[in-house]
Every structure is written in C-alpha cells, then in structure tokens.
Image (cartoon, rainbow, N blue to C red):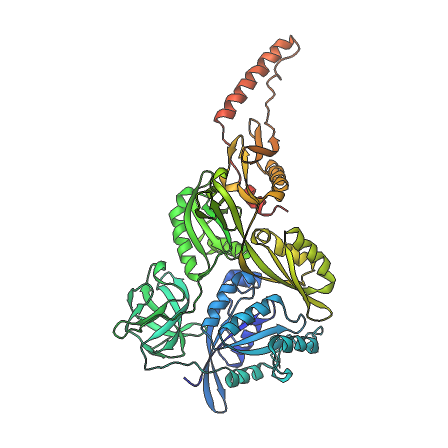
Length: 595
C-alpha cells in the first residue's frame, strides 16, 4: 500500500491536461509506441472530434524510483464548467492533484474553482507550469500568480511541456515524494467507493471503484450498500489501456468490477461496495448529489420510439451521472422526457451522443431553469416546465435561481464585459486586479440569462481571453411572465417560455418573425401570435398559397370572377377550420439560436 499513489490532473480548458497525461503514459511505458496517439485517453469519437475531454478517464501506470516499484493511478479530468461534476467525482477517488496552468495564459476561472474542489477534499496539490516551450510563455508572471493563489514557494512550481516532454520526469518524482499513500486498513471489512460506471452490451454494467478499506477477491459475494442488492464478483481488475483482470485487489487500489448487472437503476455513482459475509457498518459519505441547472424537453421525432429513447437515456445515464430525466408529455410533440443538464454544452453533447451511440434522432425544446412558485394557498411548487406553471390568479410570487459568476479577463475587455453582464440583469459584487493586465470580476446574475448564449458572447467580446466559472447562490423573487406562441389561435406548448417581463415583448416579436420564415406556406393564412395570458403582444401572418381560380375567365362580366373568388373564399375558410399546422424541427432549433 505504501507504494500506491492516486492522483488526478485538474486545469482550465485547453491548458494541456490530456497532452500531459499522454507524456506520463509514454515515460512509464504504459502505452506502447503502436497504440500511442494524441489524447490517448479520450476514447469517445466526440471528444476526439471537438478536442475536449467530456469524461474522466482512469488508468494505472507502473513506475520505478530508487529501486522501488510504484503503482500510479491517474485520472484525467475535463476542464469545461459543464463537466465539473466529473471532476468532483474524480477528486473523491484521489489523494493528490496535479494543478496544470498554461504558461501563456496564466490562472483562469476554472483553474481556481477546480483547485477549491481539491482543497475541500484535502488533496496534496502539485502546481505544474505547462507549455514552457511556447515563445509566448510568461513563466515569471504566472509563477507570481500561482504563489499568490496557493501560498507555496516559487521553487515548488514545476516547469514542463506536454508537447516536448520536458520536465515530465520531475513531475513523476514529485508525485512519488509528495502525494500521500492511501490510508486504510486491508484487514477491515470491505468498503469501496463507486466513482464511475460504463455500459457494455455484452457484459452488462461495469462499475469503477476505489477501495478505502478491506480486500476483494474474484468470485466473492458482494453487496451495494445503498440499493441493498447482492451480486457475484465475476471479474475484478485494474484499469490499464485495456482492463486487466486480477485475482485480488486491496486497500488503495482503483479498479473495476463486472457482476452481470443489467439494469441501470442498480448502480449509483457514490454508492459503497461491501461483502455479504462481512459487511461494513455504513457507506462512505461525502459524495454530493448532482444539481441540474438547465432543463429541456427531449422528444423522439417518431412517437413509436419512446420506449427505445427511455432505454437509450438509461444507458447514457450510466456513462454520464450528471444527466437526470423524468417522463413528460406535450400536446405538440407527444411523449418524451424532461431532462436536467449542467449547462448548454452538456445538453448539446447529450443530444449528439444519443444520435451517434444509440441512433436516436430527438427534438429538444427551449431550455429553461427551474423556478419556485409560491401560491396564495401557501404552497410551494417547483416548475421545470412552462406548462406546469399554475394559473396567474393563484400565484403570489415566483423566485428564480441566481448564480455567482467569476470572470477573469484582460483589463482592456473589462468595459465591454461589464456591459454584457449588466444587460443580462447582473449586479457587480467586486473586482480584483490579479496583475496590471488581468482582472477578476464577480457578478450575481439570474441563471436564466446565461442559459442561452452568454458564454458565446463572452468569448467573442474578449477575443477568447475571458474565462468564466459559476456556482448557484440561492434564488430571488422575479417578475416573470409566461409567453405563449399560438398558431391560428392554438398554443404550441413546446415553444412556450417563462421569461422576464422586460424582455418578453422583444423576445415574442423575434420569435414570431423567425417562425414566419420557417413555417411552410399552406393553402390558408396562418396567424402566428405571441401572447402573455389573454393579451397578444406580437403577430405575423404566413400568407396562403393561392391558386388563380379566375384564370379560365376571359373577359365577360365581373360577377363571373366574383362568383369564383367567393367560392374559393368559402373553401379557404373550411380548410382553415380543419387544417393543422406542422411546426418543422428547424423551428425548435432556431429558437435556441435567437439573438
């Protein structure tokens, strides 16, 4: 046990975590030259395509120092704010963390929030200055920032380059010296924390765990504490580039267990594995439940695929513990699910994965956040969906969730970022100059305002330099109204939104204009209206496609033409009563991209 080191790599997006992990794997000969490729741990097609890490990846390395053999368990984590739940789970399975900072960019918002996560779990922090080979590196300035943030000595900061491999050896030596060996008692009853799981269509569900106390052997009867279910440990092993079976795993080891579990509800991330014949007294505590930030309806394009979509979502949830969903139905779209996501990128990735991995083509409704509604009867209702809003006459107040946002940027973009945040109903709390060039601003703003396009706008205003991080900080009363979109007087519930009173008119007007472009013309006029309650605030009309019924009349009396036009008018009226308007898939997507 003294020779085991469990550590993870944490950093902001694009600071070189995965590249650094590649070098560590090469130096320890964990990956052969034949299997070597860039970002070797990012095995999902989407990750390789976008160049981002979406899932945490665990891998074991062997390393020799001073004649001793060490086992290093590395977990590479994502950097994006939407996947911070992955980071928190990885941190729970480690004793140390490499804090990677880009020498060309310095400390960014996500660096700080991931660092706080690690400090909360009492991890040993090893600061690493990456990308030292770049001509634009500013080692001295960035070291000053690190010393101020961590309070460490300048000599403790390691310089490295993931690209060239400089300084990697020193990182490995520092990990062996600094990161404490796992604590625990191999003789005690088994306690193992599940920190991840994946679905394999041949073997069932594979759970990844870290043993806190005790020992586990192949073929033993095990029990999951929270669900109370018992299983047979068919195969246990360690995570190399490919899983390698082992006969015994002991305290401090990170490994996997295959026990033929078929249903996803039986495996919960954060659960504890113990033995049936000698169980532990209680499960491992301190694992946070995920809190979704953004809610959207996900519906199958073909109503018959509903059950298939449910199965796909359950399998995806195993692989992505931060996804939550419950069934709902809509007049316009039929049966589907109300899903909770950690942010818009998370929502986009889930939609992509459903399409690629499960071949499910889905429609996603307008994303919104959850509101608390206080009624006159003294009840409190949580509303995730505009359709679930009680009648206006019963509502006393509505509270919306607020976030505390930290933005770190160059001082030249400070003014335009201030304007953006104030436009989004933000309140500035404090500003702090990290150096003469860089400033950290803290804002409090409604979560609903950043759900749509805040991140994209922030990046374009600051030419990609601003970094953004947020956490939820309670809720406040808000003047919210329900904006309905009606086609020929019938409300389309999938397009209705809860929106702040001041923004409702503009949003309604833009919605109607956009739908006018997208809804195909019919044989009758289509009235597109945006309404708050009974009051219509905007209207557009899609003109009918008219057939020229008077074409066959040459000359003659005007009454002949009028008779034909009157007949056509009656037909149009009848058609309008029985005709229905199909809202194309593009319309739902266009609403998300409304500026």
